[in-house]
Image (cartoon, rainbow, N blue to C red):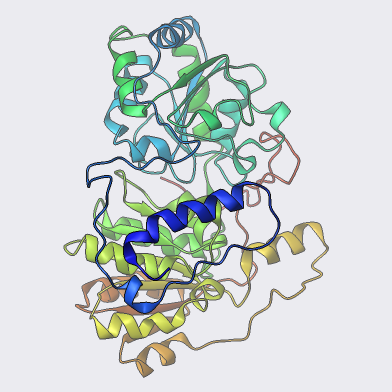
Length: 435
């Protein structure tokens, strides 16, 4: 390409050649003067991009919406299964309104956290592989699964044939490719979550309680809370719980990937949408620290905290230089167990502790942070956690907190691969409970 005006035509021809099935690569060589030149778009600036295979439909089909309303009114054990699509479409208010009006408990995916406040009485927390016991029990016993903005991924469903076995399924998603991809719905609705929920709210009565179902779910919540051991040692759940208590409804929480991600999802008290940032199904170690910097620029008046594992943090540890250069006041809390913790957990539980390439050397993150000119501290006692977190949050610039947690602490509950989500390893039976 030697002329910027020919660039669009050449790229179209290259993609046409690639799409014909002809073997071999297609090379487009752009000289520097072309890549820096200003090009006027012949199609005009207002043209909408045309992405092959993606034609979003915002309004749900009226007949399907009516079918969904009919199922809602007939059900006796309904549950809402909400995902990141609810947050993307700013539909949290409508979701909570529907849950309250129909007395339906709500369980969320990892990406749906925050679409209903953690302390809301209808919130069952996260479901699936590391979901709460009571969320997984409620899904298994429900007679109607109201699914919105979700994709029925294997971390949620476990054994797909046994997922919500007694339930009729309503599935709402803006992407038609997700409807029926993993679980066939009884009522498919293609549309934007906010639009569809608004239409449904117009058709359901002000109150439609299910007292027996509500009592059953409340009993599960009371009898099967999240727990961690109470023996004076320093546990990662304690760190997250203390952080949540200090922040209240303030702050943006970013996680890395692995055990730190699941503990944060379980134990932090999310109060609103977009308070939680995670790489989700991509499972990208090293995502959290750079993402926290972006979050801090977007929310300069909010405390931004990244919860990291020592393995994930070392994927992008050089970005300590970036936060110094631009004085980005993110707070890094490293749950340091000297392992690639999630892989180690599987090796412990299913491979008789035959640890392979999961043990990490001891790293003194406080020293590294201070070498960059960043304030930092190391915590080794549970009794010091609260004061250390307050110190980090009160500091005006970036701060690194290296918290030396119990090395072989595991994330429970846990659904083994291939099992039903009601077949959980529940771990500890005594200790601190969720509030």
